[in-house]
Every structure is written in C-alpha cells, then in structure tokens.
Length: 311
Ligand SMILES: Nc1ncnc2c1ncn2[C@@H]1O[C@H](COP(=O)(O)OP(=O)(O)OP(=O)(O)O)[C@@H](O)[C@H]1O
Image (cartoon, rainbow, N blue to C red; front, side, top):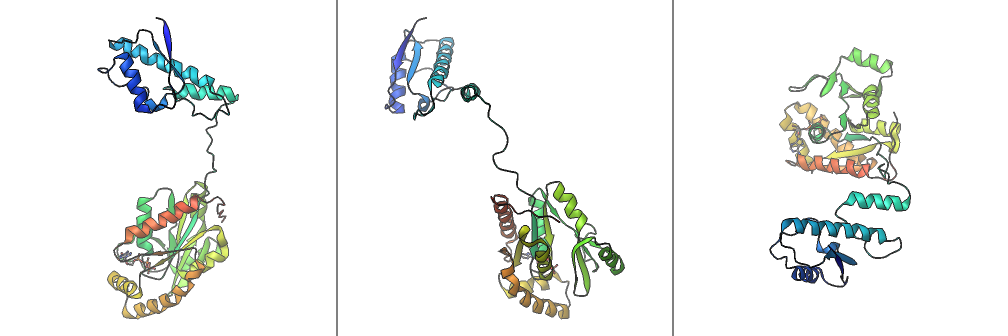
C-alpha cells in the first residue's frame, strides 16, 4: 500500500487536529486510539493511502504506522531544537535512542545521597506525653528505633520490661556506669535513668533513626555530648493546667510528688530555647503531635547539609 504525507501544522489546536484526521478518514465509528493523544502530534504524520479504514485489522495497522512514523520523527529531533520532542508510544525505544545519541546510558543511581540516620532526642516536663508520643510514633513510622532506657525505678502498671524500660536494681545500674555502657545517665527523683550505648550502635549501623527519651537535664547532657549532630525536640502541653491534669489522670503520683513535678516543670520550661524544635502536645490531639514530630524528621531528612551523629 502506497503512502501519502499529510503535513499537520503545529499551530492547529488539538481538537481541530483530530477533527481533520477523523473527517478525512471517516473513522467516527471506530474506538479511540489507546496509543496516541492529540497532544503528541507534531511535524509530519504518515497515513495509509486511500484514507478509508473499515475493519479492525486495518485500524490496528494504521496505529502501527503512526508509531513507526513517530519513532522516525524522534530520530530527526536534534539537541538545541526548542520544539517539544515527539513522545512515542514505546518510551523504552525512545530512551534507547536518546542514550545512543548521547553515547552513554542513563544511570539508575539516586541523584541525591542517602540521608544519614538521625538521633532524635525527645524531652519535656514530666507528664507532658513523651511516652505517649513515642509509643504512637513507633506504631506509625518505620525505620526508627526507640532506645529502651535503663531505670532503677519501680515498674508502673502496664509497663513491660525491655519494651518500656529495662528495669534494673540500683546495684546493676551502678555497674553499668562503671563499665561505661551508658551514653548518658542521671539520678531523677531518687531513681537512676540511663541510655545504653550498644543499642544505638547496633541500630544506626542498620540505617535506623534513633529516638531517645530523656528529661530536660538529660537533654542538656546529650547536647554537650552530641552538639548539633542530633535533633532536640521539646514537648510541651498547651498550658500549665493541662499538664497538671494529665499527671493527675495518670494516677501514678502522690500529692507530694505532684508538687515536686510541677515546681520542676516550671523550671524546665525555661530551657526551651536550648532545643531545636518545640511540639505542643495539646489535650486530645496526640495524633497531631506525632504528625508534627514526623514532619520534623522528614524535613531533617531533606536537609542538604546532613547532621552526622557519631556515638
Ligand atoms: N495529647 C494528649 N492528650 C491527652 N492525654 C495525653 C496526651 N498525651 C499524653 N497523654 C496522657 O498523659 C499522661 C502522661 O503522659 P506520658 O506518661 O506519656 O508523659 P511523660 O512525659 O512520658 O511523663 P514522665 O516523664 O513522667 O514519664 C498519660 O496518661 C498519657 O496517656
């Protein structure tokens, strides 16, 4: 079958273009082509002579011709040509053509380096919701490891050894200090709390982000050890009353301990400016607080100058 060339002016709108092709070919009853869209036409299009296609096999042949001519057109497209390159139905063929023209194949290596694992320090006054936020964060986000803190305090109802804390005796804790196994430790309300180093090493080497939960005093110590290589997040309640109500609701505090925690919280809030971020954990809005922490982590992952925490 001979061929005639039909020159399509690029200035024609896409609807005009299609109307023109379809009216010349009498194809109104045929299904629309899955292979081409009117936007993809430019330059010269080849169609079978005669122009009347009445059955499906001829229609498919017609589509094939369009593809072939489109590939031919893409060969003619040269660097420096400001026209949009024609898009073929077979992207793989076009890709190979471009690679051949450049004389090298395209790399599949990521264009940006893999972000470093982060150390995220979450701190804030007692009862603000540190445990609650971290627990939920662990449920919704993969690739993070919450370092289980060792503590000499009594286990609270519902807490699980090795999951919430490593519950150890005071003697056991003191021997961990002696063996230099803790990144940081402190005596808080008469009880020891400390961060085992080994867990951080193990999980960072596997690419996990590390979440540490410490009180304000612990955060200050970690800042002196880690400097700007870690992210420091201060968790706050929306106001003092909400904070106290939360502590009362928890039913873990005697009135004396409550008073100590409130006085301490008032002092601790003054340290806010030493942190990188503040997240307000509003009453009944735990999910939003967790989302905010996630956003901070995501933004840190997108930093051009990555933090580089080394323990
Ligand atoms: N956004 C919130 N809305 C309502 N209640 C909350 C919210 N966040 C936490 N809580 C509740 O407040 C109480 C205190 O939370 P949590 O134990 O997590 O605080 P914490 O900062 O870890 O305290 P501590 O430092 O004393 O261990 C818990 O009963 C918890 O379920």
